[in-house]
Length: 489
Image 1 (cartoon, rainbow, N blue to C red):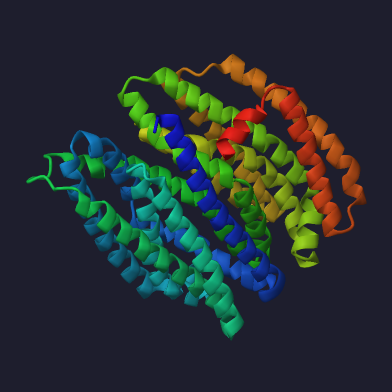
Image 2: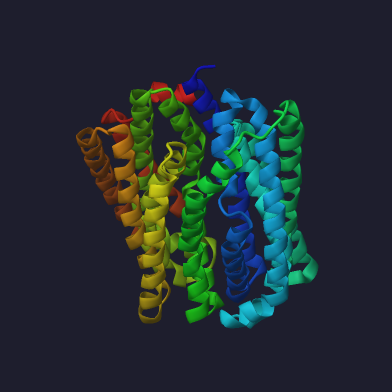
């Protein structure tokens, strides 16, 4: 199988898994928000998950992505080092998880009080379990990426999504409320972690004959490379979660529910871009090592064009139909999320580019530069949130996210350009054509949106926009129907 076939195969597997994960997440979001939890309970659940996502950083410290990078390098060059890499990483992770969990168990009440949400203390106490299972579920997925066996990553992700849905709904229906939903998350990630680590051990670790000695300096390089990755990962998680934490601290759990729901919708829309970025990123490291920069440039430019072609129209369409989408699907209790979703529609395009680019920079060896950019914009996002949320409310958090992420995306693209020498003029002309197609599509959707009075009519308006986009994309030459059929088949 050549590289392009391998990429397409990995993309299909990752996309299917992400589809299962995102559909299960969307169904869980819908059932919890529409039927099982009040906005306050929904907000409290995801506020706690946001806090734990930040705490979880200390139980990984970038080791997962660091070992994935070195697995990608050594599985061909010196496979005997792979067992040493895996064993040392798991050992360090166990120590970190134990230490962080112990501190969290001791101080969960104080942390909840300090953040202005004392009623969330039980969530943080249960977070001791959440940290361990989530950490190893995520570690197995990233390790499989390093081995370039994305099908296994796909399996772990799909299992975690389906497990969360099944057990969260079951525990809420059993009468355990939002805390029950949180334990559903824990069980879902626990099942995924057990399966993922089992496959990693029996399918990979035991298949390599360990070298007699750990290569001198390799463990040090593993830890050193994890430092910029820790900075990037920390900045990334803080960038994504600090706004949720601050909305809860400055306003209330209901506002958290509005903001979280809008963000979850954007994550659902972003699934294909995340799948593509996860799939192609290991190939950049291989191509750079082999001196195949022209192929790497062509791969990135083609992927970026396709991402923009899909997500610029999707973002505009999402902004237009945000009102009827939220009130008809989730109920009028969530009307407060409409302006948030309209602002975050811009974030969809930015995050789509980030999903394609960020992991690729790690494999190109530019993790340090990305870490600096991410750290600076995360701090800016934090500062803007503190300024805007008390003045504008929950919409201020969305504005801060879009503004700071725009800067981060620009820096990422510049770094890629310095590595691969992108054809900027050609990309600019293509982007202009995509914007023109989007404008025509937007007019078509705007004309029918005032007529939408039911869910069926909403689906019709979305379908009209999709058909308009598809026809114009084909007529402009940006989409080749033959290539689409070949990829699907």
